[in-house]
Structure formats: C-alpha cells, structure tokens
Amino acid sequence: MSPCTRWLLVTGVRTATGCFVVPMATGMSLTLCFLTLRHKRPKAKYILWPRIDQKSCFKSMITAGFEPVVIENVLEGDELRTDLNAVKSRILELGAENILCVHSTTSCFAPRVPDRLEGLAEICAKYDIPHIVNNAYGVQSSKCMHLIQQGARRGRIDAFVQSLDKNFMVPVGGAVVAGFDDSFLEEISKMYPGRASASPSLDVLITLLSLGASGYKNLLTERKASIYHACKELFAYLANELKTLAAKHNERLLDTPQNPISLAMSLKNMNDKGTSAITQLGSMLFTRQVSGARVVPLGTSQTVSGHVFKGFMSHSNDYPCAYLNAASAIGIKKQDIDLFIKRLDKCLRQCRKEKPVEVVASGAPPTTDEEITELTKDLTASLHVEAEDLD
Ligand SMILES: *Cc1c(COP(=O)(O)O)cnc(C)c1O
Image (cartoon, rainbow, N blue to C red; front, side):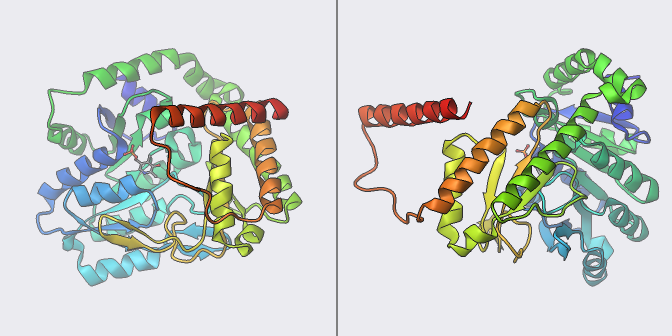
C-alpha cells in the first residue's frame, strides 16, 4: 500500500482510491482539477460555488478561465449554511452541460460551517455534474473527512484537495489531491506541466508519514492517545473559555456547532461604537501578537478579480453582527489558549476604555533606515513589556 493510500485510510476517507502530491498551493491545485475537467465538458462555462470568503479559492476558478456562480449562504441560527435549493435552481437555469462542476468547501471560518456535502454530492450525481471539494485545512478534523466520505458514498465527489503546509506544518507550498476514481486522478496528475512527478513534495510526505506512523497507529488502535483527539479536547476548552470571556464583555459565543475548526464571538457592543473601534481592535490584536484571532467588521465591500463581495470576510452580504474569530490549530497547547484568552481580554478591556482614534499618523511616514529602525525598536520594546506583564 502506498504511503498516500495509507494516509487516506487513516484519516477516515476509506473509500478513496488514491491521491498524489502536487508542488503547488491549494488554489493552484484546484485550478489543475478544473482544467482537467474542461476536456471532459467542452461546453461548460460556469462553476457553481457556495460562497466562502477566501481569495485563493475564488481565484482558482478565474485562473482556470471559468465564471464562478456565487451561491449565497443561508443563515440558520448563527450558522451560515449551503443553500441547496439555490444550487438546484441555478443548475436548471444554466443547464447542467454548461456547468463545469460544483466547487464546495469543508474547512472554513465560523460562522460559516462546512458545506452540506451529502446534499451537494446527491445533486451532482442526479444532474451528472462533477464535484470538487476544497478541503484546505480539513485533514485535522475527523468531521471534515467524514463529510467527504459520506458525500462520496451518497452521491458524487470527483476529487478533494488539501494543503500540505496547513495540515502537516511543513514550510512548503504543496497540496494533496485525492479522489475516488483512479483514472480521473491520473488525468489530473498528467495535466501538471512539470517533470514526471512531484518527487520533492513526495519525499516530504513520506518523511511525515514515517515520522507520524506511531501517531497514526495510535489513532487506529487507541483513539485517546491520538493528536486528533487532543485537538478536539482543546477545541472544546477554547470554546468554553471564549464563552466565559464573551459573557464578561457582554457579548456571546456564536452558536456554530457544525464548525469543528473555528469559533466566533460577537462584537456587537463594539460595533455600536462604530467600525473604527473594530478596526482598532484588529490592529491591537495584531501588534500584541494575539495570533489566531481575526476581526470581521460589518459592511466591508471588496472586489476580487472583478467580482464585488458585499460583507467580504463574513461569507455573507449582511451577517447580523461583527465578530471575532478564534481557532485552535494543530499542535496548540492548553497554555497557548490561556495566554490567548488573557491577551484578548486585555485588548477588549482597553478598547472599551479608549475612544476610537480616527487618524493615528501625524506627519510623514518613516522613510529613512534610521527612522524605521527606531520604530521597530519601539515596537519590539512594547511587545516585550506586554509579554512580561502578562506572563
Ligand atoms: C488556505 C486556503 C485555500 C488555499 O490557499 P493557498 O494559498 O492556495 O494554499 C483555499 N481555501 C481555503 C478555505 C483556505 O483556507
């Protein structure tokens, strides 16, 4: 059994037949999948895409020369979910043969949740439309992998793509393309305009697999010891801590049980003070190195490859409130979460006290090397003090 196939078995997608490593990031690997499908569906112009506000996946369709048909998500409670009815009606309207594929997503920031893969896969089977799944950082979640397995069992999934660096903590741009049909996978790998195969990335994968072999065995035989289980427990811990923190600041943890990777906490009160307070919190989190947090304000429009996204970052034209995202990445420890909560608490308190400052800069921006060195020193010093009085 090849390392790749063994890896698939272990991650829970038991019916997948194979996979291969591409020495390109996830977005470009998705492009490669679309270009492969193009030969099979010469009439197709469109790709149906349940909205996810991440630029690479949008650009992957544009780069391949297709027109993305954005399917807006529906709000169910706090969660943003796939609008299956909209997908169906767009297929009827555009004609199945004019659609290259459905391009769905598993791993995403809350309050969006993984797409309804079973439903989408069933629709794809019914209308004979290919289905490509963006599973960028979904390997670390057994739930995402299970969704893919179920989708393929109940309907149609042609390929699913995951990032090497996001899932295995390796500093290389690479992706794993996996699927349920060997001949289609072979066609994709042949599309790659490079020498025979991606041997450097394959080396990385094989190394990882041999390093992690005992961990993977644990997963199979003794679930408690697996890193995946630890991940789940820490995620629950983070959710609990964030819930307490939210209550303390008169906010709430958004109820997004279907998202196994990411959490969101409302920033309603801060938003009432104006968008600049939210932006200020964002930059405060950044300079204080509260990594793993990102702030999503309301009403930001952004144009990506000529398409205007209203409410960009929030996966929705008008999500009801501004919020803050938090995620527990693979390899995170309990102490990291504690420090994260402590720092976040401090930033939130400070933001509540301060009046939002509209214009921070006075005078010209630094230009000389000396000025920049001075500024960097200041910043480093303040970060240092920050870390000291927290630890
Ligand atoms: C990371 C990511 C991608 C791909 O980004 P690349 O830079 O192409 O690796 C696509 N979609 C989602 C949801 C992602 O998180």
